[in-house]
Image (tube, rainbow, N blue to C red; front, side, top):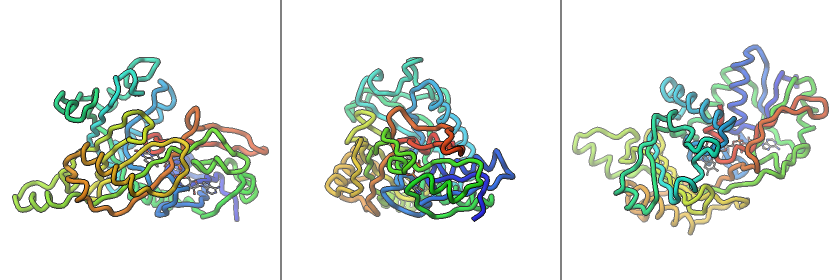
Length: 352
Ligand code: FAD
């Protein structure tokens, strides 16, 4: 096999985005993606298909992590406006917090501010009535993006193929085997997510999983029929759900709850939890009932938990890393090896 100029190991959102960005910066270069899992696959070893997903920055470093999210926010504006088929849409997010703002992990310690307030066009405090109803301390509505990953990942893949980037499906136990297969390539990009925990030559034990469990449910139906009967406007996504909802007692918590409607009419993602250091890939059906109850309390537009029509259950492991994502150029066995893994729960919103 001829060696392309650049080889990317990993076909998740990070590897796919890296390929597109490389091609746009080096249009005449040859590029290959090599990965065990690709868009369309579902595996607990593949985080990308399980994300909700939305843009809700958790960066507070007053530095590079915030800038990754800012760049991506602008990219999503572009995609939402010019490429609706990509599956990225504008949608308001309502985020409710159980703690005082100082304890809610939303302020950048260096500035004492929420860094993205201006970027998103302001954080609109929710009413006292809403706070009281949910028993929370504070909450905001802001202009965000929903990413329908079932559309977005294939869209990224199509963009890649249309630019002549090759895709090979392969599994590597050792990064040295990859280099051996492409000995004349100029640089290798390691975008293996949690795979870098086991990948020989990397074996980064700072990585750990943050488990999430989700359900995809049908859009509530009755209101659509009612709206037709009344000759009214069908809401944006064909349901009475016109915004995303999020609530988490702490940043990492068993009761992290979110409701993300997919556009248009693509069902609703209900989550979930954020549990560190759990590699358990099985959906817990009893816990799924708890998710349903929490989501219906957070977004009563969903109706009653017992009426929800579940299409599937899923579990994804966010590729978390102590100290944050590793985005670093190294020299390995004389080859340029650029790491880009460990995005945790922010792989989409920081991807560009
Ligand atoms: P992955 O998607 O895991 O891809 C890794 C790739 O590397 C795969 O192709 C895999 O096959 C390949 N690979 C690994 N090891 C090898 C090997 N040895 N040989 C060959 N190939 C290999 N992010 C957001 O921004 N917003 C959200 O709202 C959000 N919500 C989330 C909700 C849940 C429940 C979960 C689980 C995640 C969520 N995330 C969210 C996080 C986001 O999904 C991840 O950060 C992102 O998918 C990580 O992408 P990745 O490409 O690094 O890893």
